[in-house]
Image (cartoon, rainbow, N blue to C red; front, side):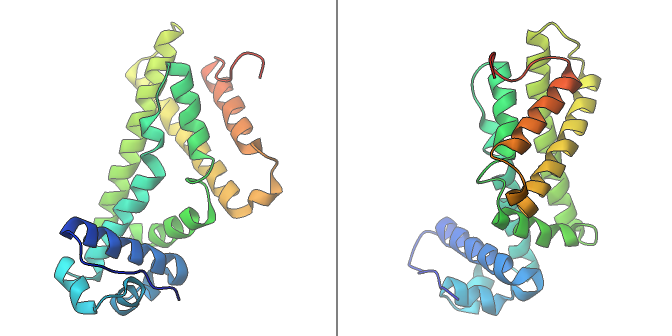
Length: 207
């Protein structure tokens, strides 16, 4: 098991390094195997240092899950350009590297198995889900308004729920069995399906 090189650094950087070591352990051993001892070995520090920065294993796992959720959503939420480009890029980002890969799936699956029984993780999950859905609703509202279509909050909410479900399913298929699909096939399926839902084109003319 490779160890991270730990060095003297500001508190925020140390916490970040410990969380990264935690994610490495979870990806390798799962949540149960990511013990304080294993995290300390991976980070190249003592267990006491981990306890100095985090009150318990549960605390460091909660912070790690926040990072997992953020990495699955933050890039997509920073899309730029006109409404059509922003919405299209949001969809593409969620179905391609680095959001869609085996490590992301491994980490997500490890945590999702605990969300239904751990109130703190459930709250983090809900916060991430709503943040993602709200960002998608905003993109949909801008895109529909630009085309003079119904961009009411209720329509955008329902569309965002449907599109989020579609993206989740295709993301899961791509992470689990990406070799079964052609290059950009899942992205093409997503864009075509969403165009049908919206009744408007998302792909550039000529594609």
